[in-house]
Length: 436
Image 1 (tube, one colour):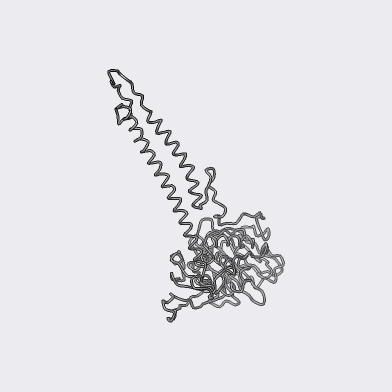
Image 2: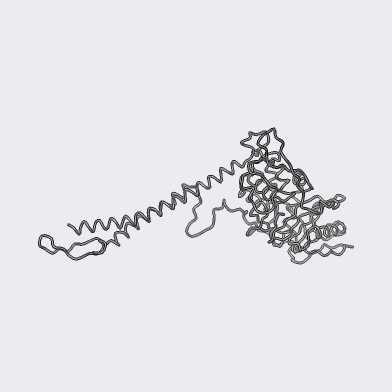
């Protein structure tokens, strides 16, 4: 007999040869395994549901809608703002005496009158490209109405380890939203962008809000994946959308203040004792036209990544006329092309009677949630920001994943025990009947 599993030879009992009918071990174990597997299959969805995690059906891998960071698609014309804006070449507004356009090295650019919305000139206005840090203008447009400027946020370690440019936030130190927004604009601080997003509630929530805001202002070329503008798969915008964002942002007094600040003091690490004076250091804008004193310059934001190359959003105002210039994929330093375009725009904006398009208006007023719930300096220290809520949410998510992993491990363990147990049970039955 092999390990108690073969039928074996007949044995003599009370002088007679008797064939012993042994159970089929493969059939026995198969039946028990099928029953157990069915039980585990029924148990797993219950455990997953108890963990609070979304359950996808076997027929689809589409994530639950609430985890999708982008807003629902909206039907629109392929060249919103005007037919000529759909051209990949350079479209120039016409009129008597309009001067020749200077050489511009950007792959895409646009100059518009922010007051009237008329687009004076554009190249590949709706070409979707990585926006780099110019996406922070959308972050600011989204969060400024939602965060009290005097509200405070206590930095966590995850804020300080973000890639790219940083202002140097210190974990455990507290900063006002005003200070974080200033760092977002001037040194283009990615740690400040992440901190502001967490102060709103979470990075995911902020990204959802950003995409909703983009749809509201009809910036349909824009898809945000993070609040900093760091390269991410699927994160794109266009020079047309960046102009829409800048136009709406500059209508907010706080946005305009942050965008036009050249340099200021920023707090360092928070001292342990309240009696100690907190050290500060100077931060400065990366917009060289502002630093160089270009006439009427009022902002807005520069950007650079290896994938996006140089990107730019600028605005200047002279004689009651405010122009916005946006550029993507610049070859030359952005201040060179920006100066050429602004000079041309101010010299020709009054001569253009047939613009190439227009900056469209938002579809409705901004939807602001929980403005009053944002902390201020007068709140209790433990509730100075909503990072606590974010931490709780992240902890709950980790707990749910832990429950799911434990459930899967338990199911595997049950299958293993049943497999081993079935074999042992079969062997005992065979031995018992064999020795009768």
